[in-house]
Image (tube, rainbow, N blue to C red; front, top):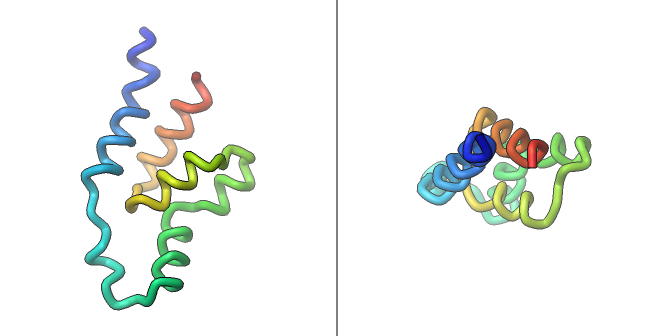
Length: 80
């Protein structure tokens, strides 16, 4: 039963590691790239929820994460 709680978290981590989003931001300069990544991951939404920590924001900046993956990660955090 405990493993069911951690499955979304592990799926989130695995997809974050293997997803390569560099090709989407080749034509942007560094600042625009950071702004685009922040907007894609809904960093502001996480801040409003009060769930943003250093580790979460670092993970969100590492790679492009779909909304479903981000929701499952937040759900896994709230269940633990």
